[in-house]
Image 1 (spheres, one colour):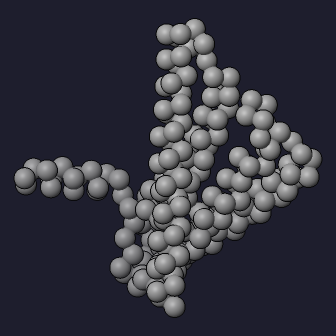
Image 2 (cartoon, rainbow, N blue to C red; image 1 turned 90 degrees about the vertical axis):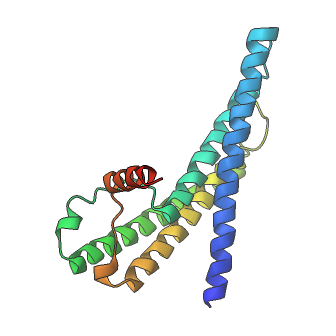
Image 3 (cartoon, rainbow, N blue to C red; image 1 turned 45 degrees about the vertical axis):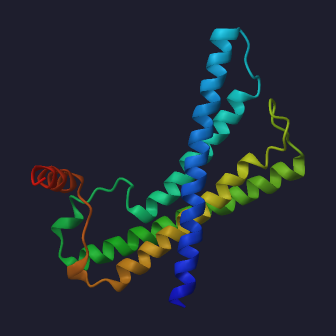
Length: 183
């Protein structure tokens, strides 16, 4: 069973990272090309702005889904780090359950939106593609983010209360400065 979850973790991580990197890279490249065309040749690609927006949205949402695995999202740990380890663990479990419910709900509503756009036959203005295609990012990325939260929930549940470490940015910066000073 553990092997199956490792494979799923690899697939989900690859999808999140690839979509974030490709979306951001292509979005920047396309915006750069369009700016060069506009200012150097007095012309532009009419569809580039819309595609750039979609690429950046895809990159941001898949990047955010990846951030759940890395623990990169902003969290206020000032209050819960003052509690006992057992209460801290309970708060973290509750927060992850709440996040899973929220992300799952957004994924479901994103799926409903895709179905609605497909039924209405809505088309994008500049790209002239069905609007449900770029909106697929909603159910997919939020479902992957919910999965990542579920992974974190299992990790917290299986970790002893005394061994749970909260990520503190100031401690990470201090440790980084110390490690650079030792070199």
